[in-house]
Amino acid sequence: MERFLSKLIEKLENTKAGILCAFAFFIIGILFCVFGFFKTIFIILFTAVGFFAGAFLFSDMSRFKRFLDRIIPPGRIR
Image 1: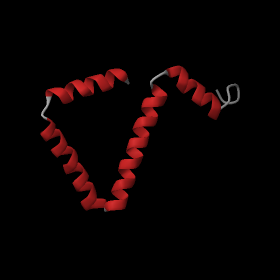
Image 2: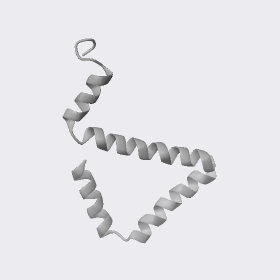
Image 3: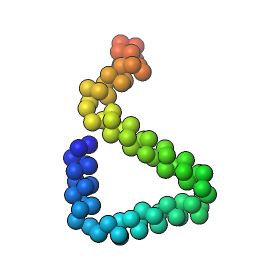
Image 4: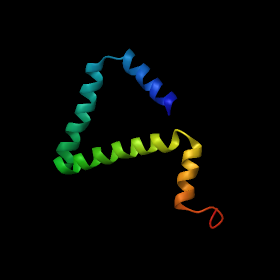
């Protein structure tokens, strides 16, 4: 995940921030027009939670395995 974020930050440094922000707000504007305010906030919130949960869990595979061991005890299914 760190490699992904470092590549993303490197690309952001090389591009113009105005174009990137304009594209991001264009997408958010389209979401507002299509879905409405509360549904768009719901989509953005769950996208952010999914990103941070994925970044936290998959940053270290042993952490992910411990997480799976809590949900599905070893020996029962796997």
